Amino acid sequence: MSSTEKKAGPGGSLPETVSYSEYLRLDDLLGAQQPRCEAAGVPAHDEMLFIIVHQAYELWFKQVHHELDSVLAAFSREQVDEAGLGTVVHRLDRVIEIQQLLVQQIRVLETMTPLDFLDFRNLLSTASGFQSWQFRLLENKLGLPEEQRLRYSERRYSSYFPEAIRGKLESSERNTTLFSGVQAWLERTPFLELGDFRFLDAYAAAAERMLEADRETVRRSTLISDEERQVRLKMIDGTAANFESVIHADRHEALVKEGRRCLSHKATIAALFINLYRDEPILQMPFNLLQALVEIDEGLAHWRSRHTQMVLRMLGRKIGTGGSSGFEYLRDTVDRHRVFMDFFDLATCLIPRSELPELPEGVREQLRFHFSD
Ligand code: HEM
Image 1: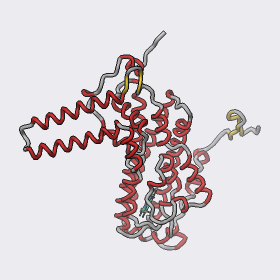
Image 2 (image 1 turned 60 degrees about the vertical axis):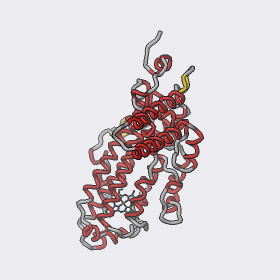
Image 3 (image 1 turned 180 degrees about the vertical axis):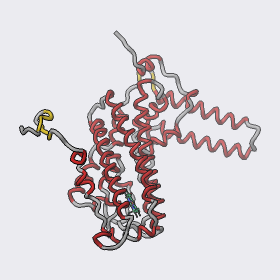
Image 4 (image 1 turned 90 degrees about the horizontal axis):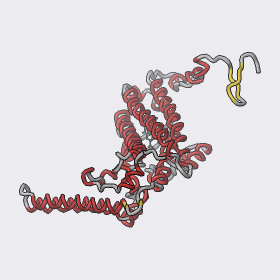
């Protein structure tokens, strides 16, 4: 060991001192902004901003992958360590905060006007955000299925990438995703059937009581005409059909086949149980996890929507450098490229706390943290 090195742990050695610049590799980092307008000899002041904003995004994407990889490792185990669930939620909360930043950064880029952009747009050639492999990898790790992707040509999205990256992207499609990991974890939820208690039966009866009370209110109302009464009763039938699609596994599976649901019936029921009884101590962390999924999905949709508006402002209806229709393509991804919609849809099937079936004492005891000899 030289005098400037010291042991850093088992088998490792590090220089004894390191400066700020060395630690952060600032020479590499700050040398990585090379506006093409300089090489081309054309003035384009805003190209520097364009590069730095994109690079900042890619750095944040890297951090998001760092968080997601550790979360996916937890969900890849046969049994998710319940004690580790707090860490999983904490890391997903960090992803949510980063997403907020990603949305805000769009404002900075919007200080560039469409005319300023045109100063250097042709220098981008065919380079496009569509080729951000970290973004594609993010979609895959969340669990966006290939068949749900919008295509703007006959080619698969992965065919636009060099071979090494394509391999990475395609293997991420086969690995555990946040969606598949959470689904498998939900399917293992205990408490849904304990002793004589059958959650689904108790829930179905409570939903029916609630709908009947709604029907009765409409029937007795003196404030609406008979015609309006029929319309309201029909609306309640529509709500009842929604409940039935959750209660009856076969109806749920039919919706899965039609592509209107993704989550399995078993996982959906578990997620419903967690949402309804989330005040029970043992369900609080699982509930926070489900909330985090909803936030991440919403955060990404929010970014897509803001990016789409920015593109409209910068390009109008011009086609993108990546070859898409530009605005129209991006606008359609906002609704199509969603991963956790089933968790949003659960809200349709919630019943008020006052109607919630009481859990039998034995089940409640198991849902509370208690000390015993
Ligand atoms: C002046 C600013 C920008 C313009 C005009 C613009 C334009 C576009 C266009 C037209 C597309 C569609 C694909 C294509 O045909 O090229 C696209 C896709 C994309 N852009 Fe941007 N973009 C801008 C800034 C950004 C920034 C700052 C990011 C951050 C990383 C970004 C990330 C992406 C991503 C990830 C896609 C793929 C979206 C998808 O396929 O779902 N863009 N962009």
